[in-house]
Every structure is written in structure tokens, then in C-alpha cells.
Image (cartoon, rainbow, N blue to C red; front, top):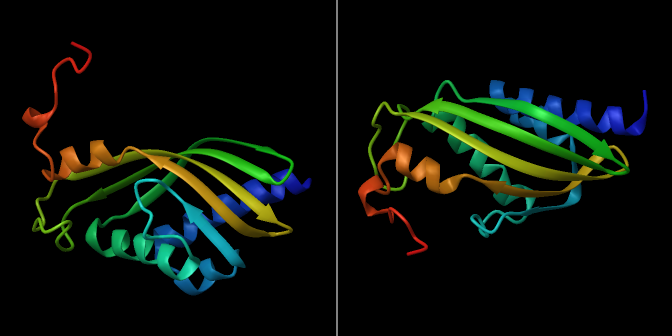
Length: 148
């Protein structure tokens, strides 16, 4: 197995840990100097900060499921197009009590490895879509044609 194949398997294993809520096993995949980079979530820079997000998703959006739609690897990076599914039934989100609404969020991550450990994740996610699905933002507030 090539290093790129091992790195892609590690990303699959990370998603599986998140799906079953195995936070102890999840921690073993990350370098101590790990950094998370996402302009929508500047509060999640370190591993100790980042882990709070999948843990909260697991309880707020059961059954919390992460899947990988497409993935490739180059050198020390994995490029992954992913999907998160859940139902807003486990607790409040941004002050909104459980709605029973489904959450379907797609995101792209570039995962960088230092040897066998994840040292950085750069992600872009459809946060606006999630806010609309949960009622945080009313769809009627969005411009019909923002380029007019």
C-alpha cells in the first residue's frame, strides 16, 4: 500500500470514528501540532478546539453520519469531498431548539499529513445551507439575484 493509499484510509477511519463517537480512537490519528483552518470556524484552530465540533454534531444531529463522496491523494495530502447528515433532534443549535429538520452539509477538506498523522485540515463547508436547513437564517432573507 502506498503512503497516499494509507493517508486516504486514515481519512476513512477518521470519518468512521466520528460516526460511532469513538473520540479516544480519533485522537490517535492527529499530530500534536495539528491545526484546523476554516474561515467559517476560526474558533476551532487546535485539536482540543476542533474535536468539540464533531462531538457536538454527534449529540445534536443524531444519527450523525459522515461520508466521503470523492477522494484523491497527492504527496502528503488527501483531497476529500464529503457529506454530513443528521437530524436536529439532540439539542439546541445556535439557540434554536431541536426542529427535527434534516441536516445535509457538503464540504471539501484538504488534509495534510506529517508521516502517518494529520497535521492540518483546511475545510470549506456549506455553512449557509446548514443555517437555512435549521432555520437559523430564513430563506426569504436571501437575495433573489445578488448581482442586480
